Image (cartoon, rainbow, N blue to C red):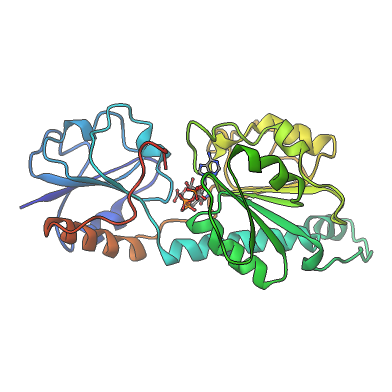
Length: 311
Ligand code: NDP
Ligand code: OXD
């Protein structure tokens, strides 16, 4: 009987194990080393060298949409990697992006500060049509967020690596498209994958290029891609000197965000603990098992990672 290796760090995989086991026998790492009956691995931040020791591994399934946690293992065997593209995960991310855009747009941080001081003061209102949201990384999640934002009336810009058309979105791509994209963006939403090209991309110089004449009172950063896209110190500097008015951060250079980080206490920052879109086994295990069955029948796997591109 073919078996699945489940290898995760950072959370309890019990529910994943239970649901995967409906279809196949599941081995929880650290068991399963060198096991020739393991054909598939389901992983989140697997320990290095675990997958390289499986002689008959046929494919790796990521528990998340991002796969930097898998590719970081330099001993990774040369088998296909399947990532998550799923309506439930997408819905979570769309909700997070719309929530954070609307909160900044409707001045939620300022009103919460006023409430804490019992201040009754109506602030100037803008409509969505006055604001351009720029989505850096307009892939599966970014394009769904763009659709929701355009339906609310926001102008939406999108930046991708390759040329890509998304309905209702002003499209920019590649290095030459980056500055024009930023120059016409008031609220920057970061949904890029972490790759060798994108590591550290959200730095002070990039944030300086955002538009700051929008009536929001300054540019806004919403970041939910990966923390290592950031230079956290640069984001703080930009908030300090007014380059950024506010930020919503879901991901951080170091996670969990250390208790000593000055980001915690910054009143211009809204923090969530890498919780924008959580992978739910109740939605994700069934398609994984279906893909395993299809692969057993020789059918092609879907949602494959391009290892050369790194996502
Ligand atoms: P996709 O692969 O569908 O989209 C990625 C987008 O980024 C594409 O548009 C791609 O361009 C673009 N991109 C990649 N590299 C570059 C580059 N060098 N320059 C410009 N654009 C680039 O990924 P998803 O939308 O599914 O997910 C995006 C990321 O969101 C994940 O990798 C993960 O890190 C993060 N995530 C975070 C979660 C959270 O809870 N915080 C939850 C889920 C995901 P192109 O279209 O040309 O390929
Ligand atoms: C993901 C995540 O990549 O949750 O899916 O970060």
